[in-house]
Image (cartoon, protein in one colour):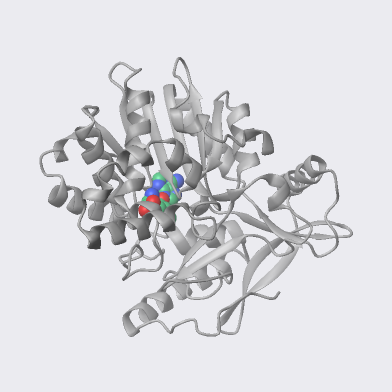
Length: 394
Ligand SMILES: C[S@@+](CC[C@H](N)C(=O)[O-])C[C@H]1O[C@@H](n2cnc3c(N)ncnc32)[C@H](O)[C@@H]1O
């Protein structure tokens, strides 16, 4: 299998290389214990979340200039401020509504949201965070305690979804971190791509797909109206539907805001997209080889938003809208956030306009990143979603 791999991918430093060596040994043992191969979703899960070893569970920087990638809240507080405006609309309609952020990363979005909700006089009594990584949860606590000491006691870390919830659920770049299966279509049927070992290296191995994976791939083919050609390779998320069902299970009234890079199903499984949508991040280099640098590089997959919409429908959630991140920001109050712009010092104006360009321009995050809002109960569609809705493209 060919992978786009920048010639200039940097070498890990000694500490990271040593950590990656430990993760490699752990994965090799997992593969051996499983009889010589792991399905890709299991490999991805272990590489990202194995306790104290996986990319998200261990202590590397990850976010920001010293890490591997930047996310919207790491780029600018404008993202959190607009999202807070939209959340305030929802909270204004719900008695004792709460905010629940899933996968809070460094904690930056929580800082920005709390600050902006406070300024809007719309602070919820609690701001809950559900984070799978104990290391990141600790970093979130440190950041929030340092930057929001007066609001710190409103923040609660959960170990599971609440049994019942009313308010706003936010997940920025969480769907792309859920493990995906890789498949390859062959004339006799669907094959699962597994990870095996060859000498010191990890290598790909095909095996006939389970009935469940085969059914998922055939359902996609039925949906797009064609059978994939021989050797067509892509990903399918078997985790998204249950993740959405779990959110739906706890949401009694409110709105879920999902942000991620993703496309509709037709684009996801386009004829020319013959090697899928995996994206790995290492020291700000993006490439598509998930078998490199285990435990010290991020592994993600773009999101099939038609699948998310389908899962939401099945779970009984309303699809309130689907739009680009740029449209969300522009429809959601970016203009209001920019009202004092011309009074700012020139250096700050330049900094802010650079950040907004990164968040909104089509060649940056503006077009590839999408916002999908799901709802339940008596809540109006947040105003941003009334701008340039693309739900009919899903
Ligand atoms: C790409 S990071 C995004 C972090 C943050 N939302 C941001 O925008 O900077 C993915 C985050 O989701 C967390 N995560 C992944 N799967 C999760 C799950 N099932 N439940 C809760 N958090 C999860 C990771 O530990 C990490 O904090």
